[in-house]
Image (cartoon, rainbow over all chains, first blue to last red; front, side, top):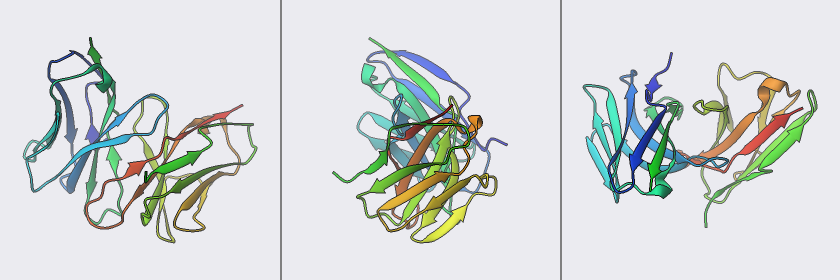
Length: 113
Length: 113
């Protein structure tokens, strides 16, 4: 049972435009959410996180939105740059879950110059 | 720079021949994790150490073992690698307090011949 789902395996966006990556979850116990970026042959790099007490967190070009009632979060990248082309993973954890992160299957973002 | 280091980056072994992957960290984090990631899939947690306390995931095969001789180092031992164990192996660390971000190393890609 996939508790964290990224339904779009790929997304292409023009340079300078907004990229929106989506993630849905089913476990209502999740209270901390993270986005990671992964280049080929490298480990995931932490991008941004959000706690369930917030609905938005912003860091430069990256903004994460959390809609708890819909069990949905999204990552917005504005403006998108070619260097943002990578696989983006959404991850979630629950307090008292022995520190386990549950990952989505990832979305390949391609930013076209 | 504080970081998570994995050696080697690429490892080739033979079917059934034991192999050890290593991870070290300069972040002084209490928790170290090992994940397995196969192509186009989410990283799958194998086990983690909180300090010296070992926590195995229920579905991690017995073929996979881990050692953490000190805070900085953690090893993944695959006792008898099968073809299905070919994957990227990711090491991660976290502080060990509250809602946590995990920081990943670059990974070791294992090939089993």
